[in-house]
Length: 274
Length: 288
Image 1 (cartoon, rainbow over the protein chains, first blue to last red):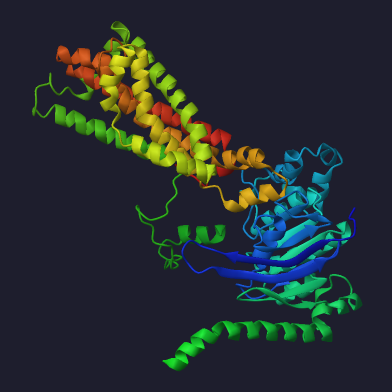
Image 2 (spheres, chains in turn blue, red; image 1 turned 180 degrees about the vertical axis):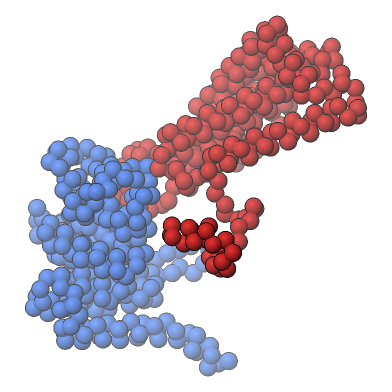
């Protein structure tokens, strides 16, 4: 399925120039590699440009510098190979759950996937069989997000992009969704790049965590929670109990608070002067 | 439950249990929702109050019955118009003018509104132009249209078109702009090209809003109809009213006004029906 190269980001940078004002550097010199079949998490404080980076991979945002490629092909715009799930609910309100999940296959004319039952397969994978003919407004937030995930996966993307997909959900639902996602991703061997600001989510889902610093966004550290091989897959309690988890959690918290103090420094300086 | 009910019935003099504290209910409150029965009832009440007030005013002797007839006289005139004076033909001509001109207006304004709402460059090109035309009063075009198109139907249809089309295009563009960016971006990352996104997301998302805008602009169309039919027309509701004025048949004029009101109401109801039927997923979200 993949030719082995995965997602490669080289020296990506983004500078926003809003008319008249000083240009704002959102990202600078980010290089990273996500091998096929892995779950990568972009983690960092707000303002670190993690969403911008994800949107660049999706082809929705043009990089100011650098280059991105997926499985050897340069990213030149949005495409079916990089399906994206957003934080806001994007299931189309005028389509039923089943029609939503089939949408990508319909518009790309992928009749063979439609025939082979990709739609039903992924409706079952996200456990929405009972509401397949309901409209999104009849569903809860978690269910709507499952529709979006099934719709994207039914389209067979080479890379699944997720921008804080569970950020708007309550904690209980968020945990269930994370477990559901992890189960599907392991089974389908999907490559995932997910944006998060939640340390637990990052360590629970990620095979590799890219920690970005803010102002401007730079790749500060690549964290590989390899100890996860020692705990049963998807077992949250065993994971949280693992000494290595607690060590990494503390480490990332420290990184986060360092980012916080660097950002607060102008205020502190102003206070000193005053 | 039943036991306590029996108790309270048989032992009437027993001290009543303190009633469960109920929320204070008020006849007027914010955020109330009415079922359709109450809606119809209230709507009819409004109408009855209006007709009753009209009746009182007409029979209070403020003006002669000839200049200010009451509801009964106007209803009699209306029946008379339909039964003896072939008013149905006038009504049908007016409806035909409305339908032709409004269809033309939608055929022109919808593509413009869709493209303006979807693409900033097209909006930049057309919005200042249409925005200016919108401020020109359509009746000001009547002398021009009379010279260009004569006194026939095409002149009237052109006036109705001019009165509506610029507003319609700009309002439809506003509706189009309401599409959430995340919907468009989702469709793009699912492999949708520009044309696919335009039709399956932008247009489809806007459809209910388009219908609603058309419903509102159709009411404006009826306003221009009377103006169009007052000038050099031989048939139509407006023409009948001008004829009636010549003979001081005030009851006929009022019957014409009532007819337009009823037709407007009927078209409005038709739009609502289509809305409910075509957009079941919006039920409960938009109570208009």
